Amino acid sequence: MLSALGVPAAEEQLFRALLRRSSATVSELAAETDRTVAECTEIVKRLETTGLVNRLPGAEESYAAVPPDVAFRSLISSQQDGLPVCVARI
Image (cartoon, rainbow, N blue to C red):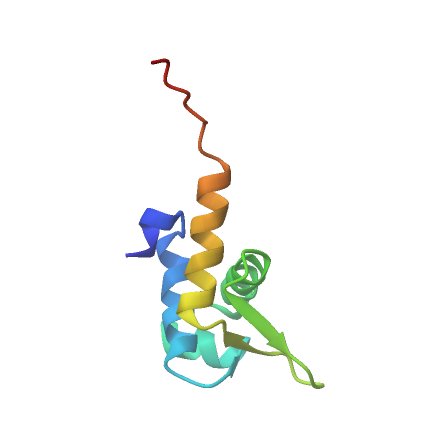
């Protein structure tokens, strides 16, 4: 579903896992998605860079998904910014 917005399947999987919970650590995400902690760390960092997740304050690194309406609006805006502008002559 999110591939239309440029989100790879692995990132969508972790984003959806975070949506199902209020927050999670990378270790918890790894256990839930059958991925390694190293894989999840990389994916979560990419999700954070694209604005789909936020790192929560505290000593333990835990993350929460950005509400979908906010996250998707940002992704759509990014996609629109990359589109070429067409000017029609009349």
